[in-house]
Length: 242
Image 1 (cartoon, rainbow, N blue to C red):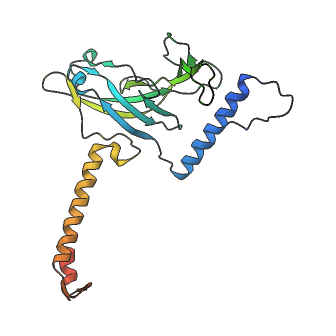
Image 2 (image 1 turned 90 degrees about the vertical axis):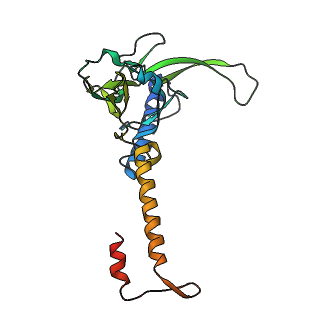
Image 3 (image 1 turned 90 degrees about the horizontal axis):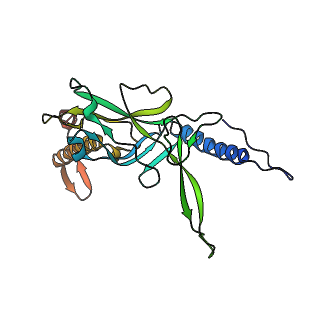
């Protein structure tokens, strides 16, 4: 973890001062969240273009994730979506394949970003220039350089040692020759709502509990208002409901 920068009078400001200060606060926030919830990483939102997938192209339309090191990705709202994957290049013998969402690790020295228009094979960020308006006065907009996360989709057959990654989705070959989502696969998620399979299982569990509650309540007599009468044989009946 980075140490806190010492700010003092007469300090000659350099970019490293702001970089280290930014990194220090990011690490403090990440470690605080990790202390409260050590598994606070995974998928928050994911949508796949199903029509493109049927034509052997893996393309994401929405992606919001939190990586193990605390880095947040929100695409296409803030960051760029990962490049589409041409699944037709896979061997015909491939019936199922898992794809990981990957982000290059932060290097301790340099090479963590690439300028616009250049390939970002190993860089964690890509520079993007945008005009920024003045939020409080009538000053003219100025162009600022932003860092966008360079996330990518990496298959299980590709090396992932230089990336921070986790499994995002699993595909299976359809009878038509294209691919489809394996709905039984559940990636690491930040909430139950982010995993339709888990949400459906939870919904069925709640429905079963409600049905058992109604059955238990229906077996009891109510001799007076707000009073439920229990009989000696009720305990064995309760166990039969489970």
